[in-house]
Structure formats: structure tokens, C-alpha cells
Length: 115
Image 1: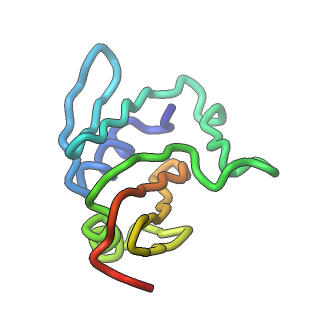
Image 2: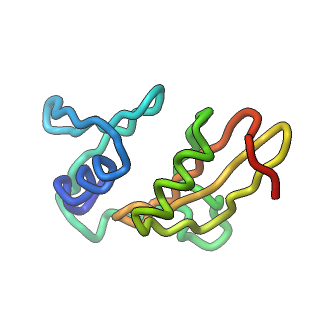
């Protein structure tokens, strides 16, 4: 759920996600990753679980082979990175915060970078 469907979808469109309205929801997609954004009737109902004490460090985890590219785009577009990036020969990962405060972790495969 998002507080403002237009603000949330614009956030993802700014990161190169495509946009499609389907039955009152918005689908934002990039490669094999699709997020379905649903407008909340009450803004106070939008509470990312990563903000709860004892919660996970992410609300959504997306596998991608474009970790390096996404990190650079987030940095270029002043998107807050809250964890990482962490690079290794086997796994790369970082976590960003979106317009509603959701922490989205992206991780996958072999990186071209090292820490």
C-alpha cells in the first residue's frame, strides 16, 4: 500500500521502471521485477514492516543481475541507500528506501565490483 499512488509510481518511473495501470493498481516493472502499488484509503495505514522493532532490514527482496547498475542509478538520482552496497564474487546486495519508506533490497549473482 502507498500513501500517494502518483508519487509512488513516479519514484519508480524515475528509476527506469515502466508504468501500467491495472484495475485500480499500478504495476511498475523493470526487467523481471514487478511491484504492484495499491493506493491506501488511510495514509496512516502505510507502515513499512522494516520500521518495526525486531523487523527485517527489508520489506521486499528482489533478485536481479543488475545490482551494480541500480546502485549507481540510486546514487545519481539521490535515492537513499540504507544498507550496502555489499559486493562479493558470489553475491551482491543493497537496500534502498522508496517514497513511502519501504526498504527494497536488491540482490543477486556475481558482481563486477569488490568491496
